[in-house]
Image (cartoon, rainbow, N blue to C red; front, side, top):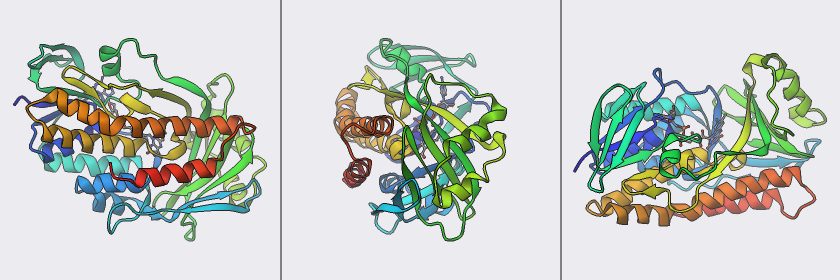
Length: 372
Ligand SMILES: Cc1cc2nc3c(=O)[nH]c(=O)nc-3n(C[C@H](O)[C@H](O)[C@H](O)COP(=O)(O)OP(=O)(O)OC[C@H]3O[C@@H](n4cnc5c(N)ncnc54)[C@H](O)[C@@H]3O)c2cc1C
């Protein structure tokens, strides 16, 4: 069987390579970035992410690299506790909720790819791709070429593969909100992600990330999708945190360096079924990039990888059957996460509409604990 080509060495591409290699497939990765660095941001993941990493044999490394915390607490504008959703582990012996830095997760995945001897070519992109029905013939930006049994587009929210396979899909759409983040030292007694609600247009809070760090976040309505001059970012973030009480008011005062603020407008692209065409398939953000309201982007990418490898191993001689099996197990789940994330953001901007954010979050957390 010809090798499988993975386009993109992010969370989805790396986990797909590890999962497929584990099922005996020959895989190669191409990654556009020459130095393969990732944003220094924090991400939060939940029990389904830990379970998917356990399937890849990487849960110990991820837990060691991150900081297990107890779950999500919801507070009102003044800091009074409104609700508490403790994390419920899905993988035996592992915690449910985990804070991680993105570089730490990248290291866990790239170290394993290196140990397994998986071929990775950096600074390389796909030039052309011809699906003959029997194989995919590809040519690359470094002048090389190759033939593959399957091409996996794991090239993120602005996927070039998505454009090639499904040229009519509209680009990611701005939802009306942006997310603000800032890392600070973690108070030793902070063991919960705490979200403050009650301000029109969004929410704010803080999340433990490592033994020593946490991040403050705010998700707010940003009419007109503004671009902020870099030197104003700390002042703009503090403005979004005006009016909050509790610990958040204290953390707000520590947001002083505009260079350390990470701001990102929220954009979404949830692909309809199918995410595959011929011998090519999309996974991760390329197929379903949602907003961060449920903290599920990384988990969805790793789950896609685990399921794709399982279905490919079940039907190695019938790729179309394997890809259909993959869709049947992934589509409704990823769509539920995507649409629920969008709904949560919409409710923040339109609190008069029906829907309880705590109930929605609780429902999804329980749903995602179900087997994939
Ligand atoms: C600021 C921020 C905070 C986030 N916080 C969270 C969080 O708290 N929890 C969570 O679960 N998720 C979070 N996410 C979302 C999460 O990071 C994504 O859902 C996840 O990274 C998706 O993985 P992916 O592999 O599909 O895409 P990516 O991680 O984006 O990887 C895509 C890779 O493809 C490469 N690439 C792109 N085009 C090409 C090409 N033409 N050829 C070769 N390579 C290419 C890119 O360089 C990149 O390495 C956050 C995202 C951002 C930006």
